Image (tube, rainbow, N blue to C red; front, top):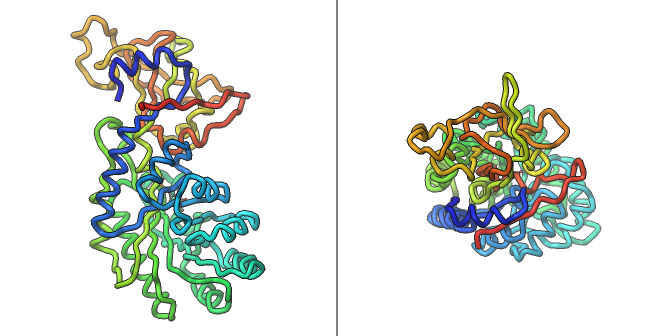
Length: 398
Ligand SMILES: *Cc1c(COP(=O)(O)O)cnc(C)c1O
């Protein structure tokens, strides 16, 4: 991703900033479109992963729909040109204001997370003389085998409606006149790389779809959510395996004629297209630890601090070989000094403001450019101005 020209360019830009490689983004979107079109699957982009205008604009240009989790995301999606007939609105705590906004906007579907929410949407739709299309978000109790901070589909999670409440849902759907039932929705977690998880999800979707149809609720939409993971350890090589992902659903999901299969991918579409670029401010050599103190911290990229997420860290100023950790033979090149272990930390006044401990890097110096890779999803969007930090800037490859 980083040739000498780009590094030269970075030398003249104030750090920290997010660097977007729009070529990588295009390749990823192409791969997803190809793989999903093969089965006529509908893909919605989960806006919350990255709502940078340029990124969203490019995703929109592929004709994907938008998966929103707030009223402002619904608004942003429509403003970015997403067809409102392809906008879905999920979230465990939609406010009346947000629901009203989405009703006015005539979005495709509310993904509803409780019976109470169903009643409120019905009431607000009635006031407007509208009928709200809904999918019921069901918690399928499928273990995503991912970090416990980012699972969403277990009984103990706050998301969705548990299966033992489905009788109440069915009764509500029969009684609520301003609700139109479109289908069922699932989202079991994020950063899922084990295809077996999605296979298990298919089994549960089939069972639950049958449950609804048996009770006289025909299903038009089967929405399997998102969650496909990316390879954080090889930032330059692997685009997510969209082909295998969609193949699992084509094989194991029972799709009846007239039914549509929907997905909501966030991370897999955008994570690899961006890196956080920072500079070493200070090198602190301790007795037990060496610290690289960067000019970026949790205010720019919070994932490591929030859920112990892993990111590759590279020193762009010390040569290609030294950049990849464990690359081994860097000794042959006199320009590169021996690797050293550093705790790579930010400047924020919190002890948890550490990107990673014991990172093997070439010996590093004040002013070196550091890239924190695979930061395109849940990175820039979580930036904050804690400590009154400046807003993090974005730089693009073209
Ligand atoms: C966050 C979210 C997604 C996207 O998840 P990824 O892991 O980024 O693919 C999809 N659907 C819902 C309802 C979400 O909350």
